Image (cartoon, rainbow, N blue to C red):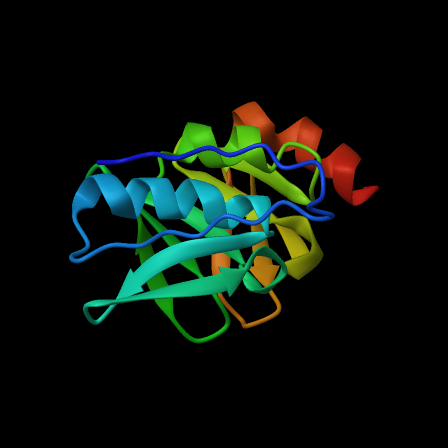
Length: 145
């Protein structure tokens, strides 16, 4: 891979251009990382890479060592790890609710207490996610409950 970095004081706004002949996993990871700088996430769906606004994402989840993010109607696979995503979204409405899930608190419609000191959060699209005991107090505090 060839990388060119050029400093030009006459440029008002930084611009990143990626040119490629084929898309491999290394480049997909780089694109995923770069898209976060623009408040977008790169995700694969049906063989295509989409760039989704972070504000449209309901939650991130790791399943079988793969990371996915979910919008109102679709799910996308991302090459980023959940810990990387959590670090990048540290100052956003996203919060960890379990070892494998990061949720957009702005997409939470309601919460309900469950057995075994857990909490069930219902999202705006009707999906339900479980808040584990470890994150319960933090989430309640962030939601103002």
